[in-house]
Image 1 (cartoon, each protein chain N blue to C red):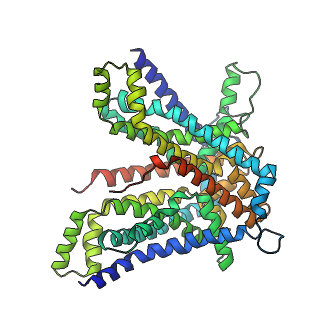
Image 2 (cartoon, each protein chain N blue to C red):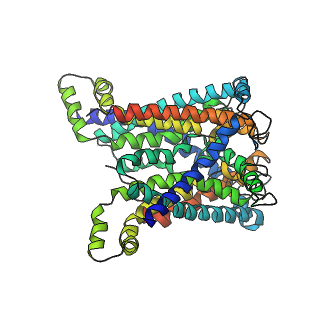
Image 3 (cartoon, rainbow over the protein chains, first blue to last red):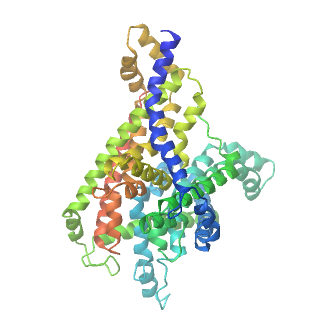
Length: 279
Length: 258
């Protein structure tokens, strides 16, 4: 077959996917960019949707809230998941590990909306948590947990502990046991071996997991809306509110682009750990 | 010894945390009264009857299945063709174009949905299951492409060459040689796409109106507050997903052709 015919077949096979991405991803994204520059009520081109973000404290606050919640979620999830993944990888006998891991991610299989709702069942004023503590006498009055930032964080941490356990476990299993042995031979205590050998070696994996957690959490609307309620808005809630209540597509577009910029900054900050390579 | 005990206690606590909401969800789906809160007074199947008798929920279930199957098939086929094209032919700017196809992976669903909402609004495509399905292909295509592309090895190229030498047409090579060899990757792509489409909420929420998917119907149910019917439909989804996961486990990992 001639080189030209080869190239023709090659183009024919990659074109459908390229076109799909172009028409339904690149063009809509550009449309969003253009829409953000034509604010409601203004005539013609204007940056008002972006300047209002810095001028209007409630918009600015949504970003601050989002960053605070997401950072807390990322840190708590890593701190909880790391020892758990360690136990699964090094304490649980080899032949039980697969089962132990599958059990650890079982609730992944409920739908995302339902998983947030099921935390509401636990945290509600008359829910499982409060009634258990009231009955046991540990509490005299129910605690307000639903519709708080704490509820949002609990819901997020639940999801990301499962996700991070998977990634950190995979990371730990890839390490040769020789590292630990060598550290021990050279006189390191288990704690020293962990801090100076294992932790640095698993850091890239942790950073990938942390980045994933940050990106998925900061863009999520469901968990803060169901568990946090409307007392305190996160950025995705603000975006949805612009469309839902006000039908203000221009402002929602501008906020979406700001959200994307935040994610891009996070990506650049982690870029040295995030080399996505293929075989 | 102390370390072992500490490990066991810690692992038990994390398992407890992971399972607590799901256990509460399933338990109170069998609640006999109107509220899914303690005390438990079941077991009763009344809320399961209510779910199966709810036309909106059963329609949502069917819609979700159809959207998941159709969009996953499209994403897998497009991803497979593109992976084959990039792996087997020398195309100009290949790295850049591959990057373009995987780009949507880095953007959150909310933003993809927003962009499509504005775009469809402009071109006059009404909100519909098809609009949401287009969005689901956008989020799943990069994934399918990446999975299949990573499995395109050189030994397969040799087998394809042999087929061509024996007189096979290009489409015959693709359908009768390449696809069967890559079947585990194709299956994994299709299955993962189905899972993501099945569970996807925000794109479907933004892009559908009357006919919608199950996650959106469940969302609508949440407006009524805590309701054992939501528990029942949630438990059903959980059950269906676990059965699918077991099927995946059996098909993809037990029968790996060597």
